[in-house]
Length: 304
Image 1: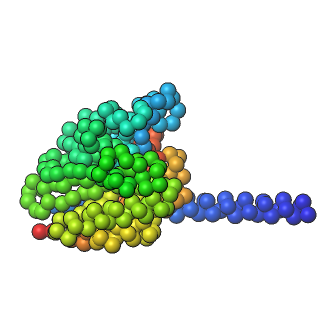
Image 2: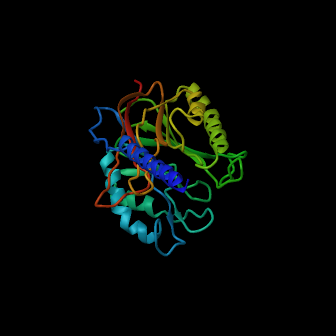
Image 3: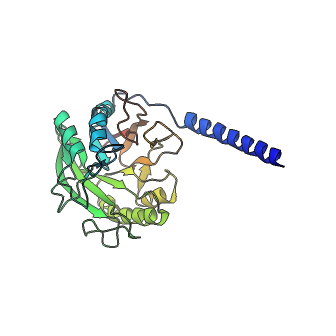
């Protein structure tokens, strides 16, 4: 009996190894960052993982940030994006204090052609989900936020089940060469609670529906911690959002382990025509991973 159990366990372990290897192969591969079509907007999303200033060393500490910051800048440049929505762009030192943001300030210093929208004094505007944009292509028109909460307009209010605060940031842009004003909504849903994700998605749907009905084109991007065809995504699709078909992993455990489906997504209203992508950059830069998520990007044309 013991021999049979040992053999069965060995077969099970072998099957699991084969399955993991198959997932790794199926979900891997980096897309080339081909130039966008003339006139297209390249929009990207990237969860860059927070910097924990309370830890003296180890993963995600300030020391670790010094190691990976050049890789993050290289990844940012490699996408060639006009607009980049970031999640977890935070230098955490306890509570909601966002007075220091190392990653945001570093990337802005290294990339002077960009400015940060959906950003401001942390006491009145949460600073962890800025939206970078090229200042030679767009003008910032408006910006705002709402929390995934029963009190969405109360800053730093906890989520529906009392978990850590989570929110959507948004910004509206006017193309400098003409064309309609459009809105970019940047979300990050909780990973543990399916009910929190659904309630958050319903709130996003209800907040963007009147914007879309009013004729404003909308991009919806970010880390939804769910599949493109999940109930979470379907709730937001009810407002008129079409998600680009991102294939393979977008989260990799900071080790290049591509075992999960895509959880970082780019969606848009139907009047925004997708002309390229979606692309995923599954690469190290200078031997370092920029984050535990890969940047995802796609190209769209504004309605004329």
